[in-house]
Amino acid sequence: MKEEIREELFKHRDIKYRDFQVKLIPGTDPDDMIGVRTPELRKLAKQYAKAEDINEFLNDLPHKYFDENQLQAFIISGMKDYNLCMEKLCEFLPYVDNWATCDQMSPKIFKKHKEELLKMIEEWIVSDKTYTVRFAIGMLMEHFLDDDFDMKYPEMVAKVRSEEYYINMMIAWYFATALAKQYDSIIPYIEEKKLDDWTHNKAIQKSIESYRITPEQKEYLRSLKISARKK
Image (cartoon, rainbow, N blue to C red; front, side):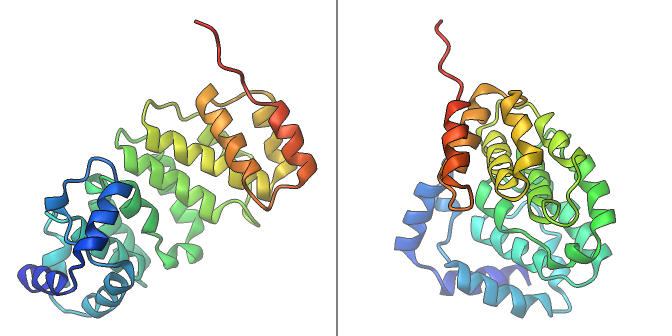
């Protein structure tokens, strides 16, 4: 199965697309990327998810190619059995090493199991793995900013402190989205400067770029930016 899948991925190789992708994902070695476009990967994920021996591929971690990780992320995202989905996700998360694979992995079944999901998020968000933490924040942003919103969730995110760019960018993205959806509840986090300076300013920047934030809110947010401190 492993060899069959890799062979199939190479049939869909697009070198120009690979070179484009390499530029979007810093630190990626072109030799570790095949260059399969996302729509093709999604089709293949649906196809291979039904294979009886797919576990041979899913358990073969770490994968050599970025595209194999993407395929695995899409297969996991489509799983309809929550327990199996979570099992395979937890096995895979430690090997996720880039923002694209992290952000494109979004199991649909999670919508029906939010209570169980939240318990896992609480574990992931304190992980020492960059993309496990990023995934946890992404899940809070995706599933817990609407009807299920509670003030304890932004508090969880605000407590995260990291030197990792891809964690801090996700924190900023979370708070920008939260401002768009729960402005009155979230604005105190900006007013009281509960984030580190860089993330604080990035959250404001992303909010100002959002069409979901009113002109009046944008003007106020601009006034809350933290100026660069003199050394």
